[in-house]
Structures are given as structure tokens and as C-alpha cells.
Image (tube, rainbow over all chains, first blue to last red; front, top):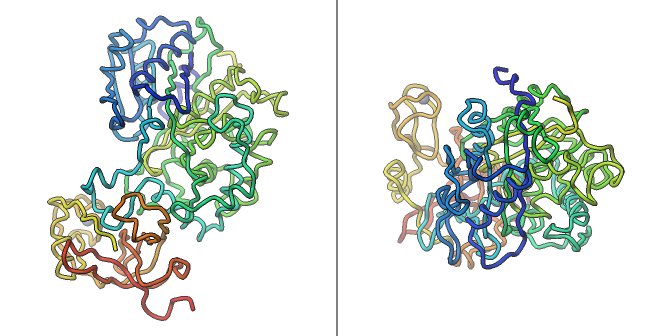
Length: 396
Length: 137
Ligand SMILES: [Zn+2]
């Protein structure tokens, strides 16, 4: 691979959190700004040194809020970065752009940020209708929401591979168990039982409400820089050992579950190849989990298990606390907080820095201390994917 | 049942105009034969601009389906529960539509279906009903 030479050349040097969950009275931009301030402070980098600022997907404002743009956030931060960017539609460009900017020398410190007031603003993830007006053809069939598109693929996977609620329940319960070890998780203090999952109401069959991630107020940011710079900073660097990208832009109804050329499968293959690791080297997975089925689909696409073996492989005993393959150790989006790909990436970095508190992998959770974690960031409906293999505790 | 008119673009207008005449037609590429939906002026398989409108049989099978138990728009409340499906048409392409005249629990993947047309009044929409002997008893 042409870019394999970039292995361990760049690192996550800082992580920025904000208050999260239900945090009323805040603009989305303010969450971006706070996350960025905290990520820079975490790394020990002055904000004025940040020369790249890239924001996750732009959402339309909710409630009393105004537009969030890269200009607004940079203005609130009081910085004048050489490069500003903001994703318009879930294409997962932040990391490749950041690495390109660092590699070219255009930037030295790049912040990637997410912020939203989705929970207080009651953000709807229905985009087929805005107000009274349809925005596309699907509204005429009542095909509303991103959830329904994932549910459609999940139903097909049920038919082809025998998956279903028995597998998705394991994912929901395992991640909820992780959230009990994470005091800032939205579902901390709210353990989930088999009965609760089974009795949950159906939203769009085959999905129950508990198969879907709740939305959150809050923000997250990471600071990326060269490994060389990262060594001089405050936190132990988390190296980007492998990275892969792929897009399958076609509409979700044209996708087929188990496709060996899915965006996630292609991206993961690149990332594993670049990092020079195999599945046996992976200490944990931090995967995009907009829905329970998304986690299953990514574990299959990444090659951890075969599509028709997910029932035997994906158990709370394996992926939950103390399990052999910990998955979404913060609780993930399903049980910690919805910050798109940043929920997973920040958690992987925290684990590799050894800062994950009660849920820290290692002695505390009865597993080995993590050195290598794979992260998956998914956009659209399995349409865009970035796989990251992150390493900590190594000498570069 | 569902009374939300689709947003129609200049690419899709002939599709929807034909629907009002109870005709299901999709774009077909004259260069490579690819039939596709939604309509676009260039063939996604070979990039040819030589694409025509092709009438289809309106027969197909259920590729996948979901059952809406929650209304995401007030206008859909009375339609609950309703079924949105991906239909694999006999000619090859997959389209999104509804399945009517069949209780959700009787629907199954690969069920044979044929097009039926929504009522006159607003934009007619192609929807599908079970057909043939494949239906589960
Ligand atoms: Zn063609």
C-alpha cells in the first residue's frame, strides 16, 4: 500500500470532553468549542498553535440554535487556523484530511471535533420530510428515518444468515453493562435485563427502540499531530498504526448484507494490512453503533466472525466486561453518548492511554492491558467507512 | 394510506408522470442494457448518456421489508402499521415501495408481488400486492 509508510507517524495527542447527556441551554457550537479547548489543554498545546480545525457532519440547527459552521467554532476559540473544514454529509473525511494536512506540512496540530445539542433540541433523524414538504421520493412510501434503512438491511441479514433479536440483544446488554462502569455514560445506573429488551416496543420491525442509539447533547474533540510532536506533549501518544477508507455511495436499498466489498470490509482490510496486525492482535473493538445490528455487521465485515456464525460469536460473555473481545467499552453510542465516530475513537484513545477508570481494560476488568484497538467510523447507511488501528504503549 | 406527495425532480418527472397513467417505467441504458432507479441522465453502470424509458412488467419479489410501528410524520399515523419493502423487479433493479393487501406477519422474503396503483387524486404511487401461489397459507 502506498501509504503504509505512514504507520505510527501520526498520533492522537489529546482528547476533549464536555458535559454530556442532557445538557440544556447550550448551542452546538459551544460544545464544539469546549471539546476543542479541552483537547488542546489535554495535550498541552496552546490553542493558537492549532492550524487545522475539522468538524464532523453539519446538522441543521434545532430549537433556538443558529447554524454551526467552522467559522463560528474557530471564532469562539479565538483562533485563525490555516485550514478549516466541515463535513456536510456523513462522509467521514476528518481523519484522512487531518493526516494529509500533517503529512503535507500544511498543518502541525489538527483538531477534529463533534458537537450537537440533539437531545435538548429533540433532533429528528428523519430527513425525507422537512415541515410539510418531502425532500425525496421515499416520503411517498412513508420510508422515513435512517433507522428504517438499517432495519431493512438487518431484515435481509436475518433471512440470509439467521441473525436477529437474539444477537442484537447480546450487543445491547453487553454495551449497557460497560456503561455501568462509566460514570459519564447516559445509561450509567440503568442496567438492562433480558426481559426489558424483549418487551421493548418495536419502532420499525425488526428493530426495537433499544436497538437504536439515543441522541445526546455534548461534544468531543481529538488533537492530531506527528508522533514526534506527540512525544513532547502531556499525554502518552496513541499512534495511528493503520487506517483505511472506503465508500459505497449507492443508496442503502442497493446494498446487500455480507458483501465482501462493503465500505467497512474494504477499509478494515487496508487498516489491518497497514498496521501489520491480525485479528489475534486486537485487544478491543470500538465500533460505530448507531444500531445494535451495525455492531454485528461491522464485526462480520472486519472479519472477526462469519455472517452465519454471529449468533455463536456475539455473546455478552465475549464482548462485555471481562470478555475475550471487549466491544464498545464506554457503553458506545447505544449506552454512553451519541457523538458519531468520536464516541468510539475517544474511548479507544482513553483505553490506550490507560485513563478509562473503572472500565479500564487490564487487571480491573480481568483482561490484558490493551496495546492495539480497532475503531470503526461509519457514515450514511454503511455508505462511508474509516477503520483505524490505534496503538499505545509502544516506542516509535 | 400514505398521503405525502414525493419530491419530484427534473430527472424523475417522467417516472412520476407515467405512474399517473398506471405505467411503471424506469431508465434503461441503450449501450449496456442496465435498468436502474432512481432515474438519472447517465447510466451508473457505464456512464453512457444514451438512456431511454423502459416499461416494466411490474412483477417482482420481496427482497427485504420493514414494518413501521411508529409514525415519523403525523400524516402517517393512521397508516400504522404499514410495510415498506425493497422489491426486486423481474427485470433486475430493486426499488423501494409498499406492500398492501397483506398482513405484515404474512409477508416473507422472496414473496412474489405485482404492482398496484394508489388512488387517483394526488400523485399516483406504485405499490405492491401479493400475487401467484407463493403466498404462505
Ligand atoms: Zn450503461
